[in-house]
Image 1 (cartoon, rainbow, N blue to C red):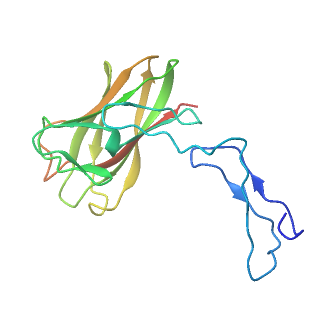
Image 2 (tube, one colour; image 1 turned 90 degrees about the horizontal axis):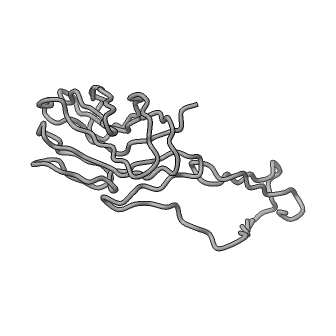
Amino acid sequence: MLNGSGEVKAGPPGDRGIEVTLPAQKPSEPAAVVVLEFDGPPKAAATASAGEPVPVSIDGSYTLPAGAAIVRGKTVRLEGTSIGFWTEPKDVVEWVVEPTKPGKFDVSITLAVGDNAGGDYTVNVGDQKLSAKADPTGGWEQYKTVRVGQVNLPAGRTSLSIKSNGKPRAALMNLQAVKLDPAR
């Protein structure tokens, strides 16, 4: 209760955390305090370091951030929260997941591509290949999420890799994350 004016409600955990709803009526001034009580100690979202399996989210999806990727090549490298300087066709980035059961997943990529840059690339999961094109997004810091296709993930340790299909124009992309959402 906020000074008797209503209830604070917490929704179920989702892919963006827990949504907290405050009462419509504004609490009394000058200040209001919201106290969150947990059944146990709060837990930070699970993450992975480069080469470690990326944990599944509560909604069954996988978010493969740039920082959890194995980055191999002459020029490609992690720069802050994205993978950039992707100028060589043999450069590759790879993530590891460990699903407990097989499933079909929609694959999307959050990327930024500068003017006069980009190119074709392939997402590989086992023997499955998804071909896509990195088109300019309006600048190297203008990120967009694009759907690439669907893959079947087997149960157990599996890798997902992305590789350029030939020499990119200037650079392939700045890659922020790959998202695997359970297909509906």
